[in-house]
Length: 130
Image 1 (cartoon, rainbow, N blue to C red):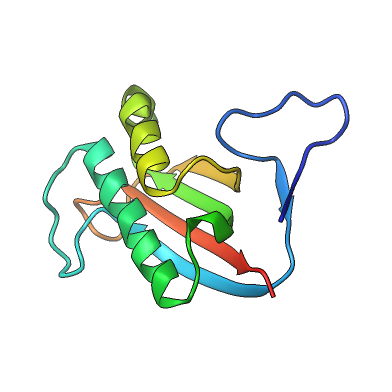
Image 2: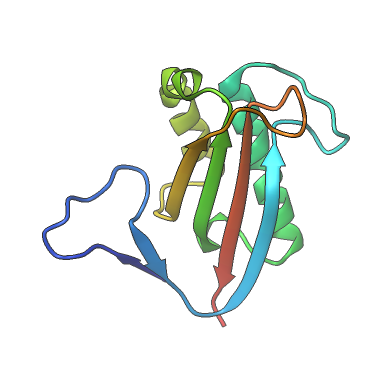
């Protein structure tokens, strides 16, 4: 896996502008902040991110992948201000669960998610080296 940073571009914080990778691909559907039984334990943005990231890792493991294989993440959040206000806690959860590496990432504010209590949904693409 190689992160892509065009010459002269500033290094982004917490993500990469692009990633190139070769191997077996694992796709993780959008994971939200409920547990394996579909139960929400909090309406707090950071707590839901923590659970959604753990759900991502659990699915990756089932596919023979781990967090270091993630090449792309798309985050859908229902409230940009709430997401930004929780950025320190979200960053800690990301480091604790996913680790410190650089996937190509996109974050988008959406008006709602399918599950009414969900505040975040995270989808992932991982590439396991051949």
